[in-house]
Image 1: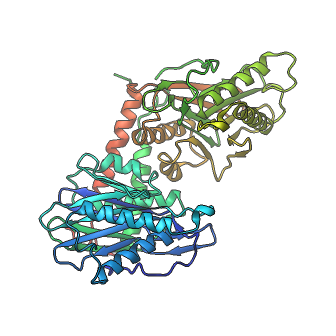
Image 2 (image 1 turned 120 degrees about the horizontal axis):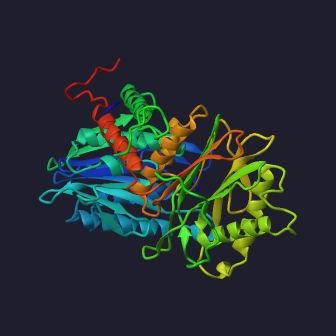
Image 3 (image 1 turned 90 degrees about the vertical axis):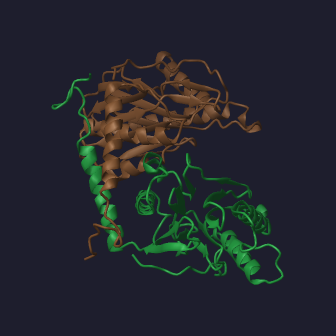
Length: 268
Length: 268
C-alpha cells in the first residue's frame, strides 16, 4: 500500500453519462473516523475509468473534513469544484472553512449538490444526475461527526448504534458490517473491516474497482493520521483478501452436519 | 428442523399491496438441485405476513418441478392458481404435466405471469405487480434444469459456470455464493451454503424472514429427496448461524496486521 496525497477533483467532465456506481463507506468509532472508497467509474461496459472519490479538506488548522462521493461523476465533480471555488474566493460568505458546525457543512454540500443536479438538461433525457455523499470530520471544540448526504440535499448522521454509513453499491458489503462493526473497534480494525467489505463488493459487482483509498481520522487531532491507497496487486491487500477467503472456506467446511449426515450432533 | 408437506398457493389475495420482497435461491450441482426460500411478505411495516414461496409439483411419475416466487403476492398467487387449474382441468391442452421440456415450462409460467400482471388496474396506480420465479426440476430422460423467469416472461438457465440463481433481495447473500458455490458441492453442503446466504440476508433486510424452506432434488430420482423447514428458533438453524457468526469474528480477528502495527509481517 502507498501513502498518497489528496487528489484533485478538478478534472473536467469527460462523459456526461459517466457515473460512479462506486462503493464508499465510513465508520465512526470511539477513537475517530475511518473513511474508504473505491475508484472505478463507468458509463456502460466501454467507458471504464479511474477517479478518486475521496476529497480531503485539511488546510484549515481548526478542522479536517473528508468527502466521499457516489453517483453521476459530472455532479460530484461540479460539487467539488464549487466547494474549491468557495474556499479560494475571498468574497465568498460561506465555505467549508467558515461554517460553524459539521451539520452546516452537510447542508451546504447538499444544497450545492441539488443545484448541480438541477443545472442540467437531464430532466429531458434519461441521464441520471443524482449523487450521494458521505461527509466525515471534526471542527475544533466539537466531536467528530459523520453524515450521509442524500441526492435530495437532506442528510442523516451516524450514531453509536448505527456507526457506519455507505453510499453507492451498498448491499454486497453490508452483511459483514452488520455483523462486526461496533464503536470499540480500533481504526486499524475498522480499516481491515472496510477492506473486507470492499473486497466482497468488488467480487460481486464489476462497477467497483481499485485503487481503494482509506483515510484515518483520529479524534481531536484535527488532521488525518493516515491515508492509504491499495491497488489491485498491493501485497497487503492481496494477503488480506486471500486470508479472508481461505478463512471463509475453512469456516464453511466445519459448519454443523445435518442429522442424517455422519458426524451429526443430536439436537439438545 | 421439520419435514413439511407442500403448501397450498390457493389463498385469496388479502392485500393488493402485499409484496414479498423475499429471498429465494437455487443451486445446480452435479448431484442435483437445491432450492431454498424465505416466507415473509410485507406491504409496509404494518402488514407483515408469512406465506410459503415454494411450490412443489411432484404428482406426475415422470417429473418433479419446484417453483420459487418473489414479487407481488397477488401476482405469484394468481400464477400458482392458474398452474393448479390447468393441472386439474382435463380440457387444458397445456399444463406442467404435459409439457415436453423444462424450458417449455419456464416459458409457460412466464406467459401466465405476464398475463397476471397485465390483468390489473396497476398501470393506473403506483402498485408494482411484477414477479420473478425460479423453476427447478427434471423431466424423465432429460438432465435437471434450473431457470430464472423474469417479470417480462423471458428466462435464463443456470449453467455449470453460473450454478446459482437468486430472486428478490439478492445482493446481501450473493458474496458468499460468489466465493463458495461450485458444481461439486454435495446437496447437504449446498443446503448449508443456502442457509448461510439466507442468514446474511435476513440480518441485513427485515423483509426476509422465517420459516426458511429447503428442497433437495437428487438427479434422476424424479421426486424430491428431502424437504425441510427451519423456523427462527430451530436448534440446527440457530447452531449453524451462531457457528458461522463466531467463525467470521474469529477469521476477522486474525487478519494480517498493517506495517505499523505490532505483529506485522514484512511485505515480501
